[in-house]
Length: 351
Ligand code: MRU
Image (cartoon, rainbow, N blue to C red; front, side):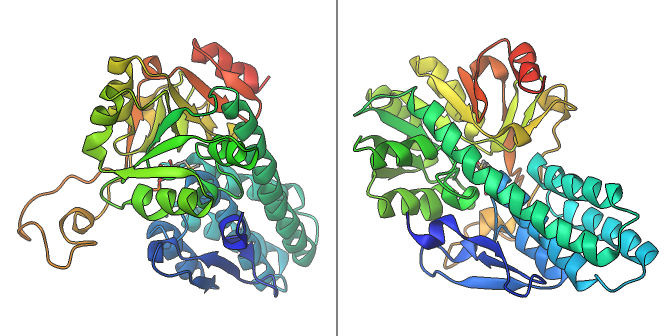
């Protein structure tokens, strides 16, 4: 896999900055950005320069660690108070992907446990912890890829929505992981990538990653999913997730639940692939998941040479939807495949 596909988020050499590949410029430009201030970090997450639940978590960990390094010479009480405020600020950049708060809380717990240590030592430990989150993500993707690969066979057609590949994680990805791993092993799949309106993660990122990796990928508009299913070209649907509730309801990019409903109609298994860090047992059902609402201009004018709707037209632009657990054939995690009833199988992962 190309270097920029697997190392698109990392700490700067001076440990006080974070370097990211700006995903908003893909597929036309490969450009890296150095984030130094809390505002730059917040903006990068909010504007989806870095996106995808696990990648957001990795990035947030590095951001908090870099900000702690910048403040390593502060008096302990001030260091602790600033760190807490910065974590809250970064956490407010996007509400749906639980990996953001998961990573920030993990670093916050470590800092709290070390509260008697010198700020410089805490800052160094936070760098280590953020790197550990990144390393674990690589291992997680690999394990999910293996479990997912066991669900499909050579020659299968797979439909995916949004982007849950290396760019959304560290390596391999979650939903794209089995396809990339299978390709490395000489298998071939026919992948259909929904373009994923309005931000086109499927067109800009998924078809890009798969094409570069030599996987047979066909880009379709979101409203063509039922056609390719009806044609008999799809054996399984693989999608990622941003937050999975205790009952198995899964939030993912807007349009995912429609794919699941279509898959049920055509008798195609619909799988959600994601790390255990995306499972939120504190969230009983999908109804408890906060859905991010985004700028209407993403629908009306972004990516168009001219606006495609009157400026005064109202828009509803939810970034995610929730797929009902009854539509999900399996939730594939790094610890194994969970099957219904999810209330039991998901809880068992944490015992
Ligand atoms: O708004 P985005 O691009 O961050 O949304 C991303 C998704 O919905 C992904 O499918 C999800 O985060 C899983 S990434 C492995």
